[in-house]
Amino acid sequence: MRNHIVGQVVESNVNLHLADADPLRARLMVFARFCVARIAREIGGAEAWEVSYDRRDASTVAQVRARMGDEVLVGRGTHVDPTLAIWDAMCRIEQRLREARPRLSRRLGPPIA
Image (cartoon, rainbow, N blue to C red; front, side):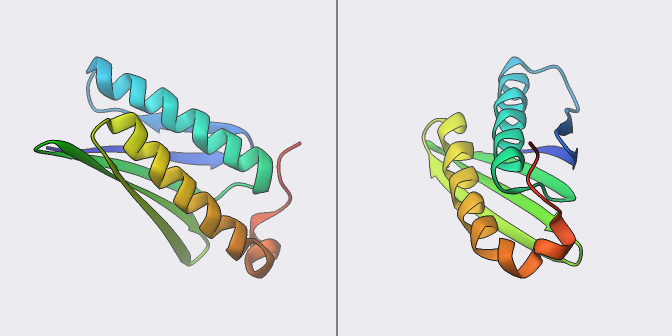
């Protein structure tokens, strides 16, 4: 089963939408929103974020995509627990954003104070 949590980041405002009221998805949405807001505060936000996860047998694969203009950065994570899979993916994309920040600084704007 593949699940998508899609959102936009405008300054510190993160809007993530869910298709249904599944309690696990709701908790994961809150966690993803927290992670995106923290990254935006520390290193600057992206224009759009997409967080998805896919539960497979005994593990969960998560993917986080951040779009900045015409460039899309991707982080992936795997873990038994969906929250930790998202955490792993967030850590990976955060590192990619830090590495890309000097190159993309004119497009991203300053970190949120």
